[in-house]
Image (cartoon, rainbow, N blue to C red; front, top):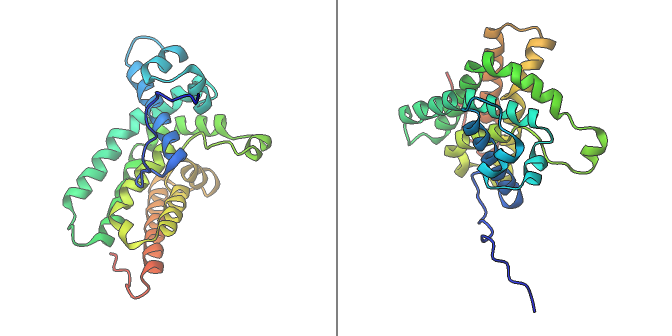
Length: 232
């Protein structure tokens, strides 16, 4: 007799956060990090077992997403420091925009995301440097198709910022733009601009914001060549 699963039904594809297994991985990772943030409010460092119970996942699942407790604690701390600022920046920009100008909305929201990330960089970049060091996968890990160990939060923010332009882009164009923006909106870009290019904070901010706007404009122009960008 076939065994009947009594678990929860599989989630429907979520276009805003990706589809299928990828979306489920992001939701699970987010639940683990949010549970960790909640536990960090106490007077001691939580254990992996405590985090797993709070997130309603197994200890093994925690380690599938975060190979070490240090990496998880760094990720949670960075998220706690930046989440409120970035959410506030996106919400304020959304409230001030004209809903009839979807293209401008997307550019302004991406710029707000860039400003939010840059505004919290003094607090989060040192943690980001440690996360980059901990999460650089060895060659055999990459060959095995291991999933990214950081950046899920960044992808969610980028998708949210670009939502007004989704109707103008094909799914392929939208996903390519999300991936392209992930190259310039994050710790890796800040590290390159500071350590390799030697830019100061003002130059760094101007470069990241310019690159993000340029990518959005290029994607929209590709989707509709007759529409010329009209940016200040």
